[in-house]
Length: 187
Image (tube, rainbow, N blue to C red):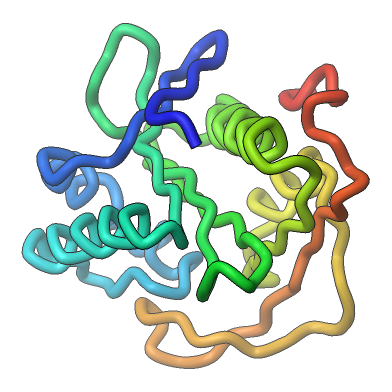
């Protein structure tokens, strides 16, 4: 996948070690951390640095594509959009988060749409999975706008910030669902 992706309002670029400061500032938010499986709360700067190194290592191994989401004309990370998988034989999974000051602007839907379009351009139609905790309706709406559908019953998944399992929905975007054909991701 290309190193830089652009939309009307955003630039998605490869995540860098220098992003750790902005990442830590935004992700060290209880409401963000508890909606992810892998963020602890609090999220110390050193832990964020390891997370960034991990995301970069996934890219080198061909099993992850984590992009720093930035606003056009700014280089500061405001969130992350990521496609990852356990190994090259597994389907891709979509993960994302955005800092609280950027909520409600449609940025993460826009970022994920261009990321899915890039996956489709580079690899053809792909089945993509995503998971969302049931108490995160905003993230569920993002997935639905992107053409994902709930897949099966509610499961229990561990959240580092919650330090326990919480109910979660699995979502699937079939290989037949083209993001490229969608006209308005922010509607």
